Image 1: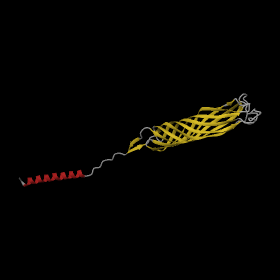
Image 2: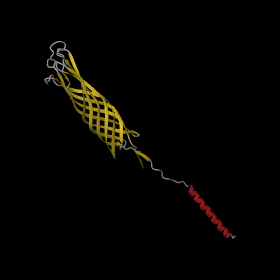
Image 3: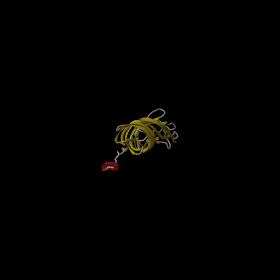
Image 4: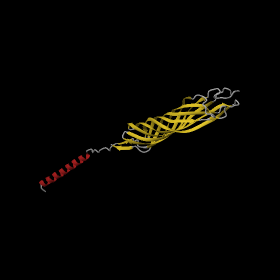
Length: 282
């Protein structure tokens, strides 16, 4: 074999080895891959929800009462009027649905409450023959009276809500709609018989009154599907009235009353929203 041939073969082998070394070095260089986009949870208010609430209420009963002769219809004493405080605790629950439009949230809510709002005052018929025709004995000059107790036993409201998001998970809202309440009024009407003996009758009136409600509140996410809220409401239930009678007294008595009932409620609550939050990739 000629020396020139050996030289060509050696040169080719050296070139092949050099190319292999360069390729191996290239394989050892670090490789970079693009990181996956982060997954971000975005809270949405567009859900059904249920919840519970509790608080305190300051009810008011603007009440007027007048004694009449039940036989003749003649007024026996001047009309007496004044405000009765119907204050007490409230406890209940709510269900609702929200719809979200960007930073605006609209919804509707139905809630029902048990209440301990109650109060009362006495009413007295003027003494003398106008209210008491007894002319002898221990009943002479005794003024007829009635106790008067009122209790807002329960209420229900159905209210649209409209609010704006101050953050994605905090909502300020106003609300208003229908209100209905169960109002119980009772007492004992007392007088004196013709024989100068005490006589009385217990009376009771249950009324279901429809009215209206307005209010405002703030609701914010607590974590997971839970939110908490603080809410104030003003309710007007209209008027309740009644006319208990005491026919055994001398003079037969009738007590006519009318009460305009309003209510101010401050309560806190928690809601559970059904469905998952939106999961977005950025």
